[in-house]
Amino acid sequence: MTLAYILTERDRDIVILQKLLPKNLIQDIKFIAGASSYRARSLASSLLATRKIPVALVIDADTNNESQVFEKQDLINYVLNQASSGIPFQVSLAVPEIESIFLQDKSLIEKIAKRKDPFNDLEWQLAQSNPKEFLEAILGKKHSLNDTILRNLNDDEIKILQQHPLIQKIKGFLSSVIEPSVAIN
Image 1: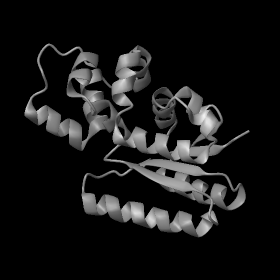
Image 2 (image 1 turned 30 degrees about the horizontal axis):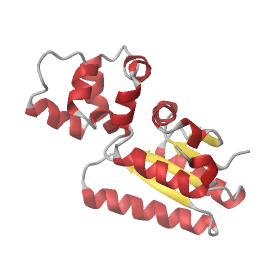
Image 3 (image 1 turned 120 degrees about the vertical axis):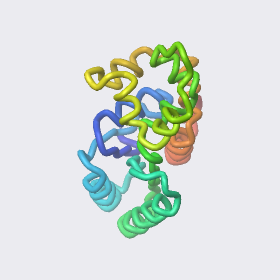
Image 4 (image 1 turned 90 degrees about the vertical axis):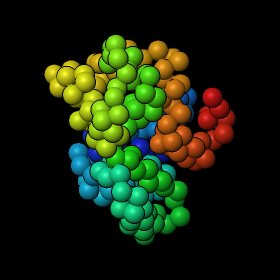
């Protein structure tokens, strides 16, 4: 039985969320990749209107500009509210991209990248402004994020990444919409 939906832009986003969200919390959650931000938003609206099941929409903000992030969030909330008929939903914007989760802890990403020297200020600034591009640069484009990072994370590293505000926000929403007995960690 599906208790809630999580909609993302890409399959890779689903892989990240499935790795970092607690297993017991997502066992009855259906993940769907919309193939683009617009399609994910449209699908979220349709699911709220027709299925009457809670929806978490997780998409990239594609900017670090706070006012643009707020405006995008506000607009999407307005559209989904029109379709929701009181069904709970949450819009979670990854600022600027979902890959920013991996930059939660500088020493962890340095370890994953097998860096001998810490990232300099310019590298770290690039990381914060364009996480996807940064990760491709340090890990190599030929390696998938899944192969290079996700498969090699230990439990302690997963716990560090789970502290990212985006993961905490999604976790809080899911906990609030499913039965408390299912959500216990």
